[in-house]
Amino acid sequence: MALKAIHFKYDSVGQNSGIVTPHIDSILNYYQNIRGTGYYDGIGDGGLVTISIDYTTAGYGKLTFNLGFFSIYGRHAMIEQGTQLSVPLTITSTGSIGIKVNLALAAGLEAQFYSKTSQSLTQNNLFTAPTSGIYELEIYRYTCDGTTLVLTRSPNLKALYVFSDLFYFVGDSNHTSSGSSLNAIIKEAYSAYNATYAITQSQGNNSTKIATTSYADTAKAAAISAAEDYADDAVSNFYGSGAVSNPLSSSTTINTTKRQGNLVYINFETYQSTRYDTGTYTFTVPYYCTSGNTSLKLRPVSTQNIILQTRDLTSTWLTVQSVTINTSGQVSYTISQYSTTGIRIFGGYEIT
Image (cartoon, rainbow, N blue to C red; front, side):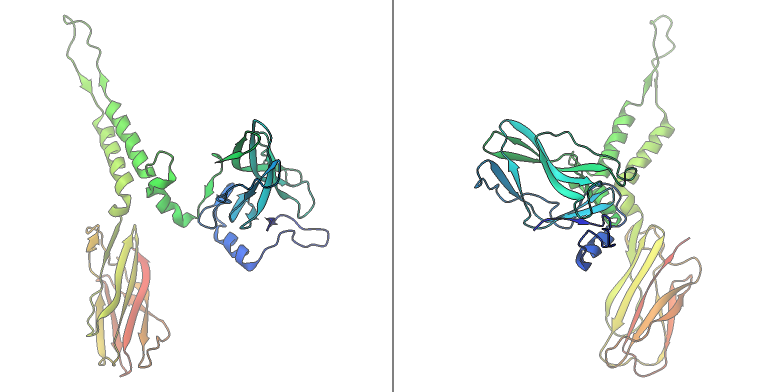
């Protein structure tokens, strides 16, 4: 078990110093849009220490790390499950433990553990110092009384997320230090501002004052109120769904037409064990969503192409083909052979 460098630089014979298996490479490719420095959330445990510290060796505390993947200015490192690090038990010290990148070192040595009796970190910009830069990524801080270590997760260690998690991040309270979702924080800030946005006219004395007047900017208050509503309800305001009408005698196994923002996606499937009668059948998307925001329309404003697929008597889904959906939400298909036992309709379009 060890700390491995991944994607650092090449040695004298052109070999990558990092050990990159297809498994590791696929994980890193999955997170390729992440920018920043920290640990990847959702894969491994971010190098957590969950096993009790081993004090068997006199004068040292041995830490055992869980699996963790890290990005440091786009350079990747992995702590393998079970990797161990011995930290000296220095009396009355406050220290730091983490990963140190030193680009001045030879290939294969650029990423190593560090532990030191200081929490002052060296953090160069590795983009501007590609051959000499040093960056210490702190994973834990610790205190020591000479016999035991007390670990604290570094407050500066950032979790890195994929963009598909952004929606979850905004709405979930577990990702903010205050225990509130980002939506709720925005609404709270707007409410506080709105509550204090009033100007009371100076009254002077009773003999000369015109009136006791409180002034409020109603237009701004309305805008703030709208922003509050949007912050909490953006998802429900722009999401809805409905079901395609099925003219065939078979029961429908999949039937969801969803709208998110300006995009509509159809996912419809129906089949049976026996063949359908020949003829032309018309499947219709409802005009409005029937769940979610029921004021959202589902039909395209111009004829669009989507995908249709048929199933034969051997229960095999055949080659996909392009069909059209018109502005009335209709998809028509003619069954001309006594061998069709199922129909799928799927695909998406933009409502402009």
